[in-house]
Image (cartoon, rainbow over all chains, first blue to last red; front, side, top):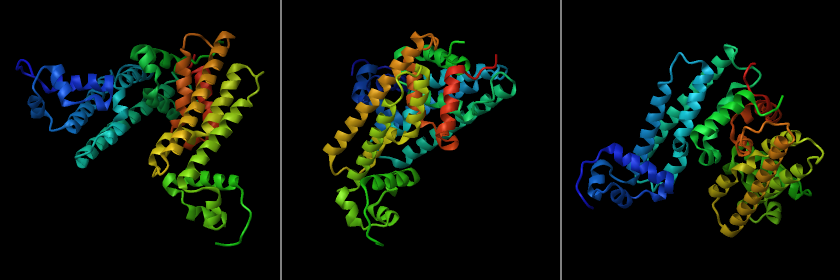
Length: 190
Length: 190
C-alpha cells in the first residue's frame, strides 16, 4: 500500500510494540501493520513468516534490550542504586512478563518455536531475578539495608510490581520513584 | 469403600482444599476424595453434581470466609492495624486469587455457573480492594502514614503479595509481619 520504501526489522518490531500496548495481542495484524508502516503486506512477510513469528521476535527482542540495559548498570554504583535502576528498566519492559499468557493466546502453529522462545525468556527472567537477589544481599552486607527482611521478599516485590495497574496511571518513572522510596523508607510517619 | 458414616459438606470442602493445595486442580478427584474421607463416591454426588460444582463451591466458600473475617476486623482498630489484619487474612486465603486460572483449567461443562461464580468472586475481591484503599486513606488522613506515596501503589502491593512465592517458604504469619514491616518502616538503615 502506498509508496515503496526501505523498511528495517526494527521499525516493524517497534510498531508491533505500539499495537500490542494499545490493543493487546488481538490488535496485531499484518494488515494493520502494513497500513501503519505504509508498506505492502508482502514486505512484512519477507521478515516474518506469520503473526506468531512476529510476536515471539518482538518479545525476544524486548527481553534482549532489557538484559542489555541491566548489564550496562555501572558496577561501581552502590547496590541500592543498582536496584533502583533495575526496577526502572524492569517496569519499562513490563510486557515481557506477559509472555506466557501471550504465547498461550497465540494460535500456536509452531509449538517448538514457541517453546524455545518461552524457555529462553524464562531463563533470562530467572537470571534477572538472581541478579536482583545478589544486589539485595550486597545492600545488606554493606550495611545500606537492614537485615531483618528476607531478600526473597524484596525480590518478589520488585518482580511482581510489573503487574501493578498503577504503572499505567502514574507512568514508569513516577512509579519507580514511589515504589523504591516505599521499599527503602516505608510509609510510616515517625 | 469402608464404613458408612455421616459426612458434612464442610468436611468435603475442607478435604478439597487440602488436595488443591497439595496437588493443584488436577489432583482433585471424587475417587481420591472418597478414599481420604472414607465414604462412597455416591455420597459425594449427593452434595456436588461434578468436579466443577465442587471446586466452584470450594472457592466461593473460601471467599465468603475471607469476606467474613475481613468484616469482623474491629472498627475501633487504628487503620494501619486494620491493614495488617487484612494482609494476614488475604495471604491466608491466597487460593482465591487463582480463581480465574482454575476456572479456565476446568473442563467447563457449565459455563453459566462458572461465569456466575467468577463474577461474584471478582465483585468480592474488588470490594476488598476498595476497603483497603479506604483504610490506607484513613492512615494518611490521621497522620499515621505519610502522604507522599499513592494509596493505589500500597493497595496494589498488598493485592499482589498473594502471588509471591515467598509465602510458601516463610508461611503466612512470618510473611505478613515482614511485608508489613517493610511497607511501614522500609529496609534502609538510618
